[in-house]
Length: 282
Image (cartoon, rainbow, N blue to C red):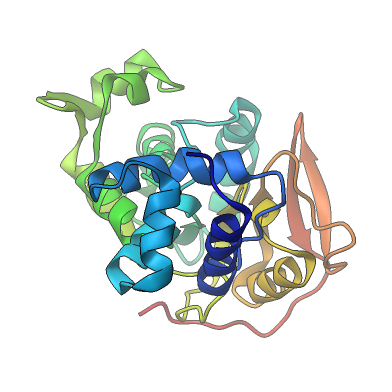
């Protein structure tokens, strides 16, 4: 049974209210694809049956499950090679040099999904910057979904997931075979601090952030929400820190306090001037 207009509107309204994600009119197929497994898991034959049930009985746990299923983003290890080359050869070396007097580096992977992005950064730090062993490195990672964060903390990835973007030498160095695929080293798991954060909601207090990765997230929000999120980024990032967005995303026409900085084929963003920051991740 295909999804009716009324059921699509129910999901779209729910998603907008809970996460500020803006579903366009042509995303009916996405709702059907993302929610079919949820429907089957709860004994419904179709997404239409699931939504019809919910419209009459708004069960909070199931509503949360739907929002989480709709907001989980595609990810992979070292996704977008140009970005990670820039991090490895330009951005991180620059930040390490600038922070050498405080020996502290704070990185936030926003909308981290199942954890491949922050773990990729952890591997770069561990392999390419051994001098940071005595530093205070805080690698923060967040997502809206509690379910996906539980999975990210576990650090177990399927054969397919480790075959997508993960170099063989890093798999050999930092992963061990697991009954469900591959388990990342405990030492790397401990490097990443996972936390549930709704980007459109209240943010916790942060330390001054040197690097913020918010890739392929803003595309899901309307313009006012994008502007509000970028305004909050301005207040948590260091004046000389870097913001990383997705390849199709930009701060242009959203927040003129940012300007682009190119590293080869990768574009990062920096602030034009300093702003008061919200310090002290707790």
